[in-house]
Amino acid sequence: MQRNSSLPVIKAVIVGGGKGCRDLLLLLEEYQPRHAKLEILGVADINPEAPGLKLAAKKRLYITDDFVELIKHFPDLNLIIELTGKDEVLEKLWEIRPKRVNILDHQTAWVFWEIITLLREREACELRLQQMEMKQLYMDLISHFAHELRNPLMVIGGLSRILCQKDDLDPQDIKKYADAIAEEVKRLEKFMYYLSKIVEPLRPKFKPILLNKLVFNVVKKFKKQFPDINIKVILDDEISDILADPDLLEKALWELLKNAAEALEKSSKKIVLVETRLCYDTCAIVVKDSGPGMDEEQLRLATLPFYTQKPGHLGLGLYFVSKVASAHNGNFYLLKDKNGGTIAVIELPLRMVEKPPLL
Image (tube, rainbow, N blue to C red; front, top):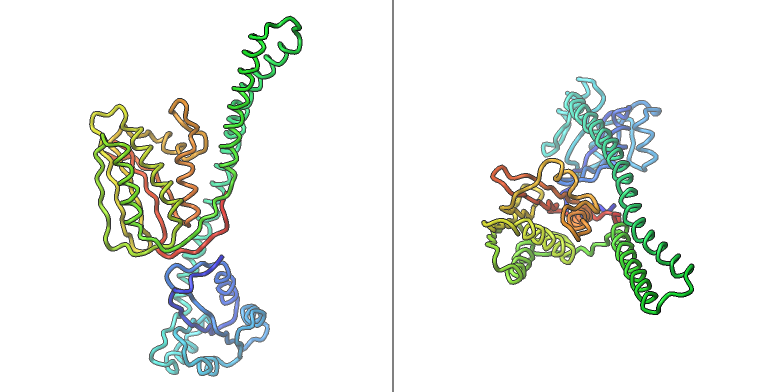
């Protein structure tokens, strides 16, 4: 993954090259910074066999057995991380540190370690849960594929056998059977086309965009196509440029608006609210309708491919929206409004780190 080069950099050294130092260096290898990048410049430890010191040497960081010399070696230092666990070392560091340099002591570091451990355990649990959910999704998809393929294949097989077994068929009957076979083949081709769209990875082309302008333009087109719907727009003026694929975002927002319009077909009160919101390091596109809403089971299943309660629909719209959000390192949420209706939220990061194409 690419790191965001616009983030502020904290230049640090580690005093104490034990296991804690090694764990920190390993953690930074997988850590994707969102607010600031921690750059370790060097490590000091009197034990040449200390695991953190040896790892630092492999990473070609500056190593020494003298922490005083380590601090003097880097005049542009911002932070000293003390991991020796010795109060006398900490006291000495407070004496010799330049005034502009802060110290993260071993006791504070252990607290952070506990937090990191808890976060990792939570991530592991979430990963196992996702794997279980994906396994169930695959089973549901296989069942759906079997159903979608079985019916047209049975029709094609039956009509083909009739054509093969009877020599005295009227030309009109032959045409009728051939047309029916062609119709079922067309149905299969359509299904296979949309199936290919599910497994095809999105390849977003990121560029700076004005999110509010994009939302305004999509809503403007929506109003022309659905003039009977009362659509309200609230745009947060504090949202600056973000890195995004405008084509994918436009399609995702259009899908949400179209979904809202379909939810309002039988409603006497046809209202859709579209908002953009800024929240610290993320922004969001929010679409809320005044329809009947979804129950908990529908909300849980709505973003799965082929899940639909609308006759004639394939159920790929909200799945596509969630796919677009993931391709932007963002999230997609469906919520039940306490006053009725459904709230759809596309959450996007303000600072973008590109990811490989997602399935």
